[in-house]
Image (cartoon, rainbow, N blue to C red):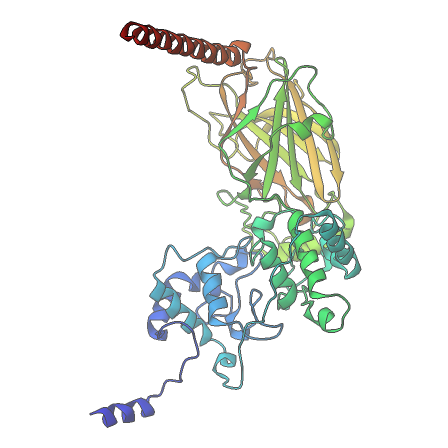
Length: 524
């Protein structure tokens, strides 16, 4: 019996797997792939699914076996663990979601096996796929010396050519970048580590520096260690410097912007020192895909918002990363390539034009009569019957407007203009809107009141990515709260209560001690 089983095993047509995972079934993997993956990656794995034309970056083409996120050396195949990690955790900053909570362990293992059948490279037994041996992270990651060393190598090995002087993806080569398939590619914005494809920790950044991102202009820097141009520790310092450009933790999306009341006039400049003492709130933006022409690849992925008021005037500061100060004629060829790559539903062929950068802040015309009311107009710029009140700003000509939007295609300017000042520096726009809390036009202009939850939403356009009109980034509704100053009694009353309680406690203890002393005297 045993010899028969051994004979069958020897005759099995399946190659012995070197995967660290349990036995994988490509037949079941195909069923998972067809249901969940083919829409983007295509039936044949060539990255040409029905949704692919709307995406930037494009879905992975499995037939070439070229993978960006690996633990193997540049030019090598990924390990099964690398493929599993990408499926489990997704690829931030792209359309690839995390599947760990949606598919079972067996389904994910099986689809890994099936994906490998698209390329003959995985069947090549001469391939010795092995992860690189990475060193541990040296201490002192956030120290001044470590970050200074990292910055020195950021400059010396040419990171700034693509990623820019301050790391916002606006270097002189950024507008020329394309992947191996010829699609335009954006240099990573190093101030948004939560969008890094392979993870945003210093360890993960170091791994990407060692392996490179195959299929893209991002090389491996392992050879510079071999050539003794820099040491492994110095490459770690570069990774730590890059990590330092982003917040310590990914921003938490909150529902409410708290705008404190300040003493003195509200700041009108985006670079006023007041803003350094005010909390920032992050709000993600996504492509407008509801109305034609839809836009699936927005360049403005989120905004930072701050607010203050003095009881009479509100100042709202919005900042966002933007690789260009549009319009910028130098970026027109890149814009044309983006428009030709990302399919739209416009009637005519796409054509690059010098569009400006734009931002809009949206409110309802009126707050609900009841403070508890949560009624809001349609988030996508209202409707004919229920318009929204907006502040709009454009970079060229540099101006701001207030008006009513009655859907995407109609904006009626109001005479009461909102003031705005903007500055652009190394790939970042900083914009401050100021307006009186109360205005004479109570029918059309929202009356901003302290202590109320004021609905607010945001829209962004990057002109050098061909964004204008309905091609824009949008948010959902959030809330703005104009905080009132805390009455002194709120702080004093608890202190007084504590002191009274302490005093009463001492009195009780003192009386108990006297009684105990008196009883002791009578007993004698």
